[in-house]
View 1: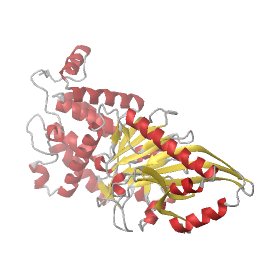
View 2 (view 1 turned 90 degrees about the vertical axis):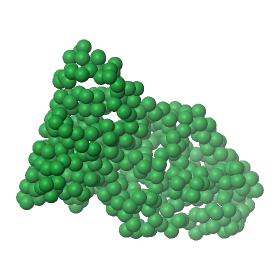
View 3 (view 1 turned 90 degrees about the horizontal axis):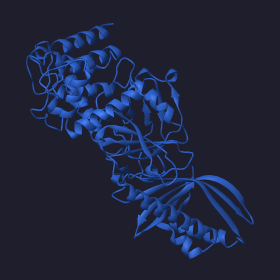
View 4 (view 1 turned 180 degrees about the horizontal axis):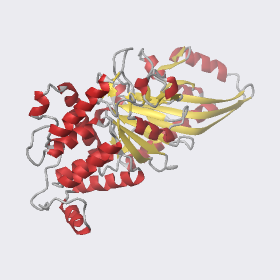
Length: 450
């Protein structure tokens, strides 16, 4: 009860006494004298058209994207917040206040929305340099650390959202998706952003369909050891779902654990576990950008929304320090190159072309119980007893490993179903390869079941 009372007092203080210069958060400068001088709310058709004509190219693109998001999901609270900021930046104070009033009623725990609403209420009378920097808040000994966290959240949300405006490129990590992979989750740690990509079909780039603000580990950089408070970078897969009834309150409405440490993490002697995608403590709406113990955290509302995209055992989660973007033509070339290389490995194995087949493996190769030398001896012995082999690969997916986590090398994860037939053995398995680009070619770095 005491905590709830203190929270209520803080929100009342924020509503009553804060002002902001939103342009300090924005890359763009305010438009020139073409902005209408009359503040209007709600828009009539003529004033709205006049306002739209006054927008910069970036603002217009942002407006179109926000409208689309709110048409798809009227309860997209982040889109409502950014819509209000756009109104305020373009001198539509009444429209901004109306949007924020509605938002704070629908999302009463969204502290950042309350803070900015309080700022805008006093924007008619004064203007300060940053969010929540009013003399009144200082005089009542408000939690300056929390205010600083909210400033950081506002900046991260806005810049992360703006970074996608008019972007037509594709994450380098998304190479080829099998029919069984409907969606991929891509995390950009540098932007505190989670992107949802949809499988659009064979030879068609995956399509961005949604994106969210996320909270990451308290320490920046790639996870190495247990308890280092960092979020790992790599290619991971959701293993299962945990309902909120079986979780402590801090995990919110549920959790999707991922398979950290994966095969490559263990090869690099990384430690730790318990890396999840999960919700937020139900007493809160959101958390500061760097506030988890290494997990990827969403608001409860947005965690509930991503459930529709996630299939345990199937859905990849690719976490990068910074997403690399490539154009469509380069994506297609890369896809063809890697699919061709995988097919070459299959043919060399099926044909028992021992020199060519063993040359498909990196000198740094490892598998369960094998390094390159022992694998070479093992495969020579096995292939010597084969009169024929028929090998088919299906359900093939290829994912690029974040280069920042492998010392600049190119590493690709290949998942597929393998059907094997020979004179003395038959078997079907789900297999995973790690391919590394070295000496101008792709070679197998790891091979094993998944």
